[in-house]
Length: 160
Image (cartoon, rainbow, N blue to C red):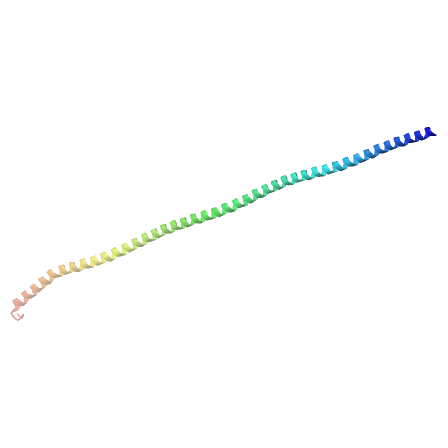
C-alpha cells in the first residue's frame, strides 16, 4: 500500500511537472506572441510614420515645385506685359515724334512756299509799279513837251 502511495505521488509529481511544463510553454508562447505583436505594432507604426514622412516630403516638394512654377510663370507674364507696355509706349512716342516732325516739316514747307509766293507777288507788284512809273515819266514828259510846242506854235492863246 505504501508502495502504491509512492507510485501515486510519483505519478502526481510527473503529472504536475508535465502540467507545469505545458503551462510554462503556453505562457511563454502567449507572452512571446504578445511581445511579438507589440513589437510588430511598434515596428509598423515606426515604418508607417517614416513612410508618411517620406510621402509628405515628396508631396510638399512636388507642391512647392508646382507653386514655384506657377509663380514664375505669373511673374514672367507680368514682367513681359510691363516690358511690352514700355516698348509700345517708347515705340508710340518715337512714332509720334517722327510723325510730328514730318508734319511740321510739311507745314513749314507749305508755309515757306506761301510766304515766298506772297513775297514774290509783292516784289513783282512793286517792281511793276516802279517800272511803269519810270516808263510813264519819260513818256509823259515827251507828251507834255510836244503839247506845249504845239500850243506855242499856234499862238499865245493856243490857237493858230
